[in-house]
Image 1: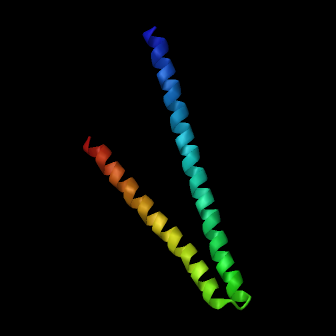
Image 2: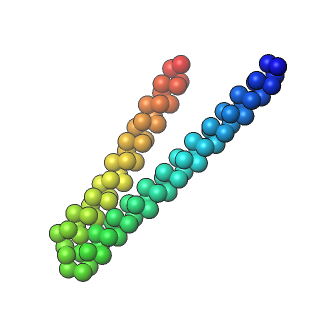
Length: 86
């Protein structure tokens, strides 16, 4: 009975890790797509002669991508350092 419980727990952990990896990958892909859409939208507006809103939208996309990347890098570094302490 203990072996079955152990196998079941390991199966659940495998599913959990796999789904977290998939969600992380999808998050990166969708964030990249949204960032590109925002940047290209700003470039398109600037090309059409609407410079100020185009610049704001384009720069918002770049700032958003950079800030999320920096936040993600710092949080993962912090998480790794906490795990190494334990």
